[in-house]
Image (tube, rainbow, N blue to C red; front, side, top):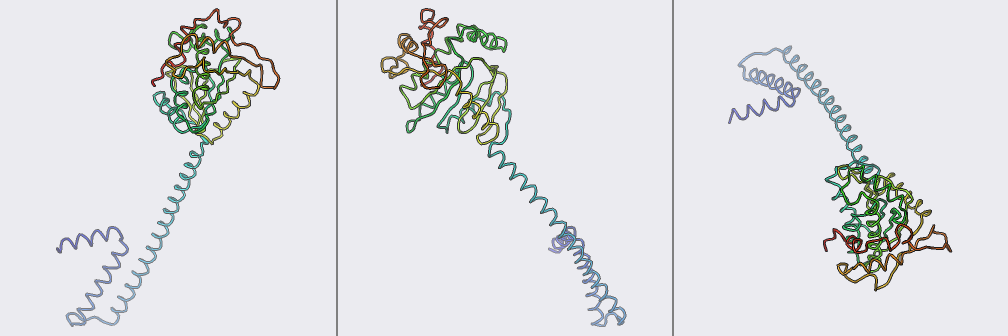
Length: 333
């Protein structure tokens, strides 16, 4: 018991040396004074006066040390508060989306799924739209209580030179075989158009399709929750920008402004071209629908339109059996 108390006193002395000195000084003087009172020893008035001065001095020294420690603790606390405030501001900035980060390739799919899970609008600008057909459009079609705005800027499949240049780019970027020749690029784009038209007919997806006159290595997937920018090379990382930040807001504005001057696509509608079940889609359904697609040079009213399937993309040059296998390729349900 005594040893335990002694250890407690030592620990207290380590934590506050000033208080320990004062305690020991006062204790020593108190012991000597008691011995004097019981006449064990005899002390003079001069000694008692000196002892009082020692006690007072020790008290003042302890008080000054305590005040200094309090000031130092206050400064430390203020530094902590400042650091927390900086962290809070950083969190607020990040929460507002005012930053852009690179994400590893293995994280791209999860980030895209996160964007899809809570959105009521979607922008896509890019190449062949394989992920749009297999994942994005099926996910958006699950929304049944409101229309889903779906804007898409893609290459014009009737532009042979553009399809050839994009095929060459994909080949140089190390893409898989099958989408690195002009005909495959064209067929993938035509399949994407049919898929979008089918979802327009059978779901709450409300598409707005425009044609690009040039390709870009960058592909944009943008929802009201954020933006992800990717490239065709599946080994590369991506850029992620939350909604509300400068970059995400600027990209959205760019897509909207550029879209005003692009050729627009008038998608067909009609029960006969779009079976209720996507698994029932046949080559004839795809052919009839693509034959009915019209293209306008811009969004100005009164502009004449022309059939999409002309020239290199004329229906007589197309393998609709092959194209019909692509609109829902990769869709699981």
